[in-house]
Length: 287
Image (tube, rainbow, N blue to C red):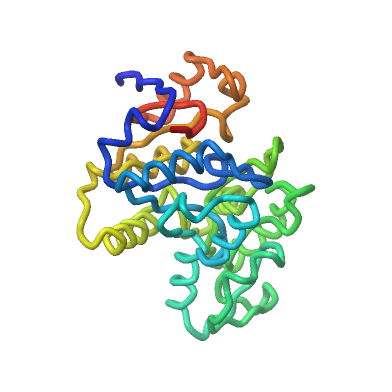
């Protein structure tokens, strides 16, 4: 594989693409505050005619994510629309009318079900499971759920994972997400449907929104994915046929040698192990 170019700014790639699918957490904000340079880069790109679709594994409807971004200081000038794994999850729940569901996840994720015909029940009465995250991600890890997952597996319950991320940054700390629980359930033999990246449904939804925003079809060769996760952003883009700009100062920062000076050898190793290479690499998203 050919090593990707290391670029200092998005402006080096921007003219080659009509639209961007940009990851949110780790690229545009860190869970506590927006990254001003990233917001500026996306705003500049849109001012030059580009379309920005934020694509996130947040287990909430896109409209709820938008309000959260407002609070974090992400300007609406930085994007055209948002597609979330919460949106894909809602569609999957809608496809199962009248079914009883057992929920794993915190109360803050309940807006994902607003307006839906759903019936929350105890495990013993459930037809399937929805996992939006850990009940308390400040102190829990996936192993805390092993016994519960064993019970789900014994009943052969299908799991809908509303957030395929394994970990995300919260400030300078990494916290576990629903993907960590879903991966463990899969390892135990359970059936899992992942609603977000790197899986196809969220990319299909995002491309449909881009077509609507631009008023016409856009070739995949003219769409660039931007993200900081090899597992979700890079592999998802590659599987869908998209180029990817990889941001190193995200969830892989520590294994790459730090947020400011990523180690070239470690970077090459992580891409080689994944079997995919990005179009280019940058430390942080900036113009």
